Image (cartoon, rainbow, N blue to C red; front, side):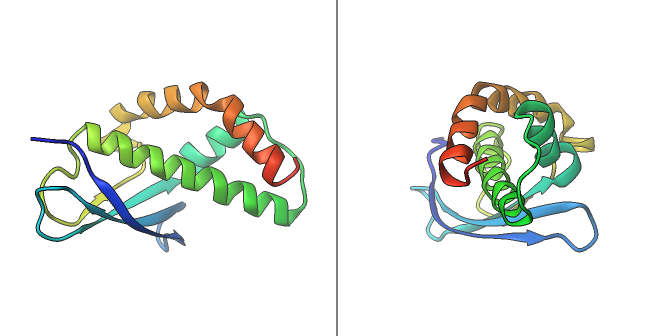
Length: 135
């Protein structure tokens, strides 16, 4: 079975009401599916977003507007990568709506793959933030 999929639409970020997380709703389509399906990807503010922002990129400072824009950019990048990792792990291989939770607790075993991606793309992310936002 093929792991190929297309992203038809992305909505978000949404603030999750009962946990410190943002979420994105992806509409994905596989070639053999008759209809697209929804995949919600949650990004933990403390364990994924702040980890990337402070420990990997070392970002500090900026106006409140700049910080908001940085959080939006990094959160979306993390969510996109978590969708790719979820695809490789078969988390949404069946045709049904799925939620990919933060890579903590039950999905903690997937965090090293996300951490590797963060470290590998550190320079690209810094350059994109500098070019787009100016910090």
